[in-house]
Image (cartoon, rainbow, N blue to C red; front, side, top):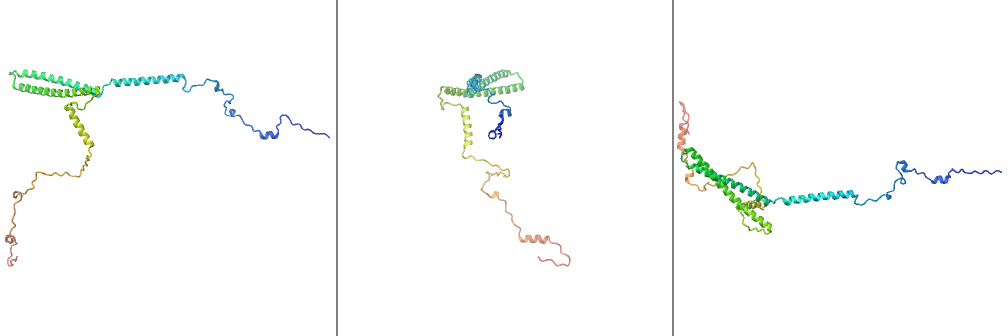
Length: 258
C-alpha cells in the first residue's frame, strides 16, 4: 500500500496561529506622521534653563532699569514742586507788589492834580473836573494802601506758620490775621449747617399761598373804630310811605283799608 504524505508548504499559516494574530496598521503611516523611531531625541540637545535664555534676562533687566529711572524722575519732580502754602505765599507777594505799585501811581496822580488845582486861573468847569479826579485818585490810593496792609499781615502770619512747620513745632495759639478769622468763621458756619442734628428740609408747595400777618393791627377797639349806629324807620313813617305811594283811587270805588 502506498502511504500518502502531505507536506505543508513553508509559507502556509496554520489555522491556530492565524486565529490569534491580529494585524494592526501603523498609525504613523495612516496619519502621515513620523514614527517615534524617526523623531530626533531631545535628550541629546542642551537643556534650557527655567529663567529662559540669556537674551530674555537682559531684556528684563533693561525694562526694570527704565522703570526705576522713571520713578526716580517722578520723585525728583515731586520734590522740586512747591507746596500749596508756598504757592499761596508767592501769590500773596505778587498781589501785594501789584497793589503797592497801584497805590504809588495813585499817589503821584493825586499830587499832580493838587498842583493843577493851585492855579486859580482855571475856569470853574475844569476846576470841578480836576477836583473830582483828585478825589478819585485819593480814594484809590486809600483802598490800595488798606489792602496792602491786610495782605502784608496775612503774608507775615503764613510765613511764621511755615517756619514753625519746618522746625516741627507748630503752635495753634499763633497770632492770626483778620482774614484767617473770617475764613475760619465761614468754615465753621458751613460745617455747622452741614452737621447740625436739627437740620430740616423745607418743602415748598406752589399751591400754598403765603399768609401775611399784620403785626401793626391793634387789638384794642375804640368807639372811633366802630361805624355810627343807624336808627330804623318807625311804623308810622312806614305806613305814611306806603299810603303816599299807593295807587290812586278810582271814582266810585271804596278806599282800601290797610
